Length: 429
Image (cartoon, rainbow, N blue to C red; front, side, top):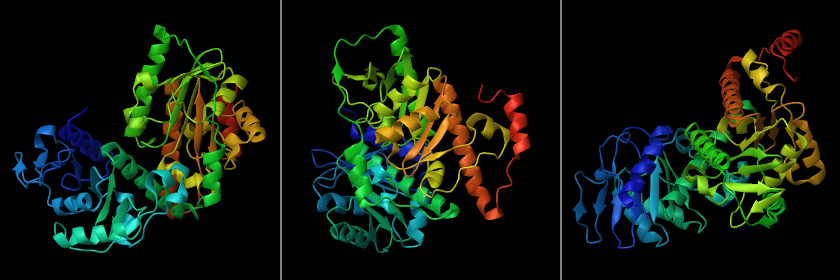
């Protein structure tokens, strides 16, 4: 088990590198089993914190460490006192959630399927002076309004949330920021289409999870290399904001229609080669919990022998299109169309409806990229790095279109220019 100081240093570094806090902003804490509170220091660069910088406030109030504890220590202490099941607290100023904070609103977590389960409903705390005991009282008051609240938007201040451990808290933090940015992007493009309670229920109920299992798994060198490649790409996708702790699936064909795929029960940042799941003849490696999209990946590989890699994921920009129904037109610059071609959108639920699953899997005979309304994007390629490259191009294209929206309507590449690209770059051959 990693020491609390090491855990905090890793998470605050991750938050900083993902541009979800500043050099001076944000604080993270852990309450250990001894009742000691470990917390980031005041006034120390968040981009270079190490475990040695983390402060321990003992149960008796004694402070151990080379710095002062965060000025927001009082509200961390108040949250732990409020809920004995809270063992980690995160407060930061990520741009998406700060946007809600300054207009005194909260993000609706029904914008993407997994967010309701990860984040739950979100509360709102009235303003009080930063670092004051009153701020702690306001935050605790907001949490107590609904027993389901584990995250609270702070009026003109940012967000605070807690978890059963630091991984749980960070997953909630990252997923909530994804919700916020998705909603903001969707509003720039048009009108967000939120999931109903029934749609969320049906999604959870309908996704294929009851796979047959097989024993006697072999791990030859090429299989182990694929596991390492998948882990590297997943971590890279998380760093680039193309996956988050709570969502993102990658798979690679191994031989014939057998493939390796990410698990569903491990946060994406923390996936290791031994977590990757082998799928053989449509059966799942025993003792593992494979991605819930195994059936979809299996059908795509089975029907499309030239496809050797699949990524299914969310990013705030791409989800802006997925959640509005606004056409994602990549006739922007030549690279975008060459890599992605014209992009269809399939209805929510297509991936677990047998008839629509057949149509969806067959779609990849014609093109490498599709959108699943209100859920995710799905991209394929002949290698994992080729698939990831397409995902990056798609995300860059989506961000460019969102940034262009205030300037006016897209002036796309013409049909004649598209045909010229098709011939010159052998697109679709």
